Length: 231
Image (cartoon, rainbow, N blue to C red; front, side, top):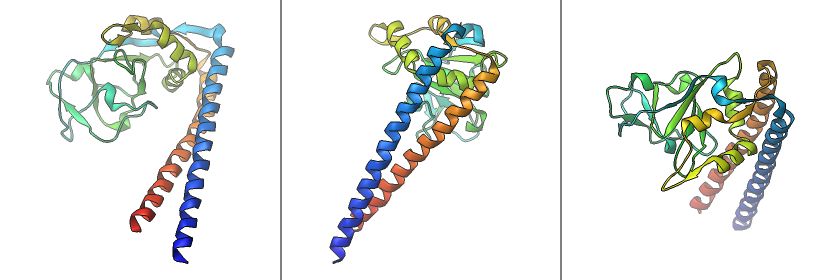
């Protein structure tokens, strides 16, 4: 009867979720191996991050957070960035300071966490996120676009080689940390911008596939939860 049909539907949702999760895991593996392979192939073109930047490892503002006010800049802290390097849309806060002008981010600024358990976590700011100021536990790199495309360098910070470098460079004290000077010395593959652009296009294609898996999983889980609640 109806109960039987419902059970069948729930099972179908469950297997669709598992299928998408398998696809997501496979896409992640492809992205990681693509990055690792690229880094290896281009290891004859390594260049320190500092030499690819016009602003190299500038520290953020040391100020407390306060309630976010529309029209005022958002305050970006390490905890506002997820593990995929995206800005969390919830819990936006403002900065409790008047002297924040020199800490305002520009389009394509790259932020990297210099301390804490997620040292090395990165985020590429874009102006369509609205005005923003960054916190002191983050360092900023403003890239020289004739040498390094910001999105490309962001992708380099998602690679296995970058994670290995973080592991070997981190100083473990009360708080794990890597300073701006050390980040500036990080050598990344830097072929010409035309090659970087082609690389970004390939990775963006994979990223779209990844994102669609993520949103399908969320949708399926939502529908399934509604089913269960409706019972």
